[in-house]
Image (cartoon, rainbow, N blue to C red; front, side, top):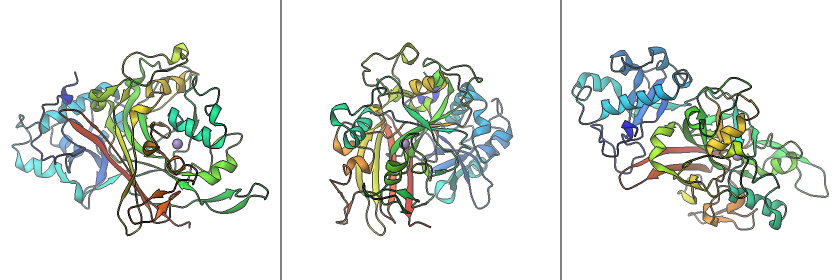
Length: 423
Ligand code: MN
């Protein structure tokens, strides 16, 4: 068992009830304040532990990390040290924050330097993302889309149950929570019998996803097996893969998504390690027909992560529009990584692999407006009396995710972004 996962641990740092950030989580991120340059931090309750200062004060001395790896504006340097080193770092921080441990706790002068109130910090983009890949791994989502746009009787394309279908996305427009986006413009073809038109998209959608960030993989030409996959995964974030459905519909044949997808994708700020999620492992859905050997796996490869999406219209209250769960995913992360590298493609530290839209079995668990409002035929009511088929200017979309068992609740915080009118 991973020491830092002990459900009985309690911290001397105050953690509000139902916080996503108890001592059993300890996610990594990047923050700055008015007086502190960007640096690596760990979230605990409503506070951030400053790892740069902690290292300077000598509390991280017997670990395989140098000051450079904490005195930086992205987590990539630290991630170069790999799985075992980052596990040791989390264990050490757990010890330092444990109420049974007085080492840091009893040094008020040090505590004052290393513990920052989250409200006074600005949390930044945690990773310099290299390559970004997005999958299409929720059976319910693929079935819903196939039913709406093709044939309800053959909703899944013939390859879907054999291949974790994916495409290469664009990393330059992956942005952190809190950064607003502009409604994209582009070509659409609203009328079958007329030519295309240009203008702001009229069908802006969210995609409820999660994404994982990789450690350095293997050299070009080698593959990562499903059994090895978890050693190459640093952690997970919430992921809103913004989409323009009308642009997508016109452009995607024959090569797939392009400008409908690359205008923005938002990630949550704190990277939750796979280690922290380990107590929440669950089985993935049964796979039938049997998959090819390189996609077979042993053990519990999914996680019971409750997911929620809400929309907050401009100057109005929030309405929850979706409750889903990461465990519904048909293809798991180990299979996605094994498939991604089976041809010898190399992943690198800081690559981002999106799950694809996560839809559950019931209409309230669908992970996009396209499905929730069923192609515009079932508008979704807002608490202010208005309704939505897609996202309107001024709307803020918030995604949240957390795990919970008898003893521990931990989560991802949120990824929030507001849609502004076209520039
Ligand atoms: Mn997507």
